[in-house]
Image (cartoon, rainbow, N blue to C red; front, side, top):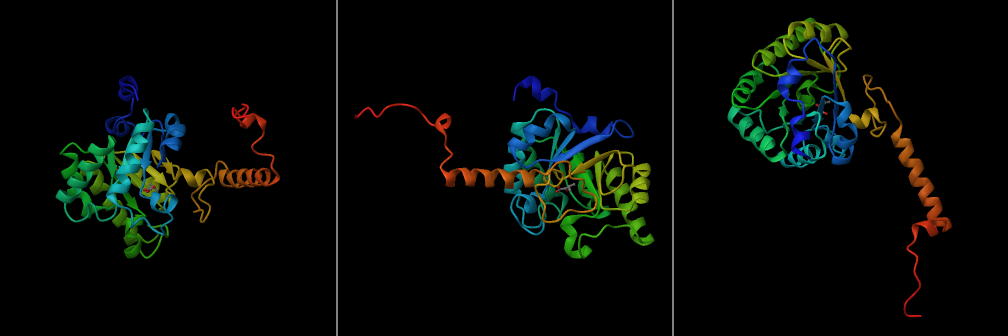
Length: 276
Ligand code: KIV
């Protein structure tokens, strides 16, 4: 990546300034080739811990390690030059204390070259968000349905349908934004709550299953490409069916190999046997 390309990369400060402005376009990215293809269309590329399921086949995000996030984060940064790359802090790497979070986030920033980290949680994480933000680490928050808390939430159901849960999510969002987060992912909440949160916090909300009233949207790239078809949540729109395309390509290849039609002469290096 040239120095010029690097200076054009969006920053957390620029993303924050987009509150109420042009919608923020965000997608997940885990690998260099896909990140390279989608970078120009995106404001934020999130190296999400959803890679646990999407790339590694785990059934939750909990088994992801800091080293895994760093390896994928570094690949995405190397391949891109436009979007702000934000890397998820994985489960267990930040919840214990602000100091533990700082050590994890500093490693992520230094070893990947990313521009920000994301962490999940509300009021209980506000002190940590402030601790990191004041020490040079831009933090994106994540409230509503927080997948790292699947075992205490009791599943991946959308949240905020009851008054007490709804006001707790509002308090969480306000606490994290006031603590210094530059943006807030809002996941899996009722439409009216997505709108209320967007009105109540002073930083951009980035919705995933949180309605079009958010300041931006994010989807898991593999979901919207039809690559991760095990389960499609209600909020996912599939823009392509690449899973079906890949299956068809593998079938065509297998047929041609079995029939001896591949490789054809145009895929073969010409040249006589010099020993003859
Ligand atoms: O890990 C992830 O991909 C995320 C998005 C779904 C927001 O946190």
